[in-house]
Amino acid sequence: MLIVLSLGGSILAKNLDPDRFLKYANVLRDISKKHTLLVVTGGGEAARDYIGAARAMGADEVTCDYIGIEITRLNARLLIAALGKDAYPEVPSNYLEASKAMTSGKVVVMGGVTPGQTTDAVAAILAEYLRADLLTIATSIDGVYSSDPNCDPNAVKFDKISPEKLISIVMAIEMKAGSKSPVDPVAAKIIERCKLDALVMDARNPALLGEIMGGEAPKKSPVSCGTWITAKK
View 1 (tube, rainbow, N blue to C red):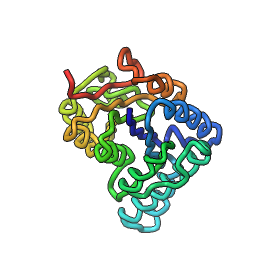
View 2: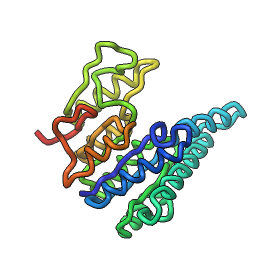
View 3: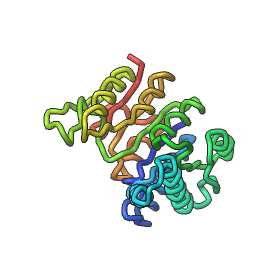
């Protein structure tokens, strides 16, 4: 299988702990033995800190986005260092470069690409461009809920939903002040338009990511740690 993994900076680069990078690298190395794997890293707390400092100095939002992109690419470089010889040595700066790097047979790790796009959006576009078999969004939330579970105690978690249902949920959550969706609207739209199979899962524990993704085919049932998004009945 060809898998594109969006690996959130908040779980990968938390406190810039080298052991966390090494643990994720070990899991990704094992996954890559059975699947072609491309990883898009997020910026996490470091990106938010740098962007906050830039805004305080009066920087415009595009400049802030470029700063965030640089941080995601630094996290990508750290993950490449943790993967060692099993990683493609450079960080692709666009989708074409990522496609070419994939032919190396190694794990390809990249960060942001374009201002205004989240890590999830970049991963979804990359998955569409490469016609990936699966997009996995590894985050700190255990799936897609009917509303933001941090704001609504009555939120219901879905084990499986359609791309169209995902968009309706995402748009409803995004319109409520203070709420945050587990998938951003751009990524949700990409998933819908190309009928991508996607998994949103809690990957704060690297071993769980390996357990779900490390077999010949990702485990689809039961998935207590996430939500499958598929157009298939």
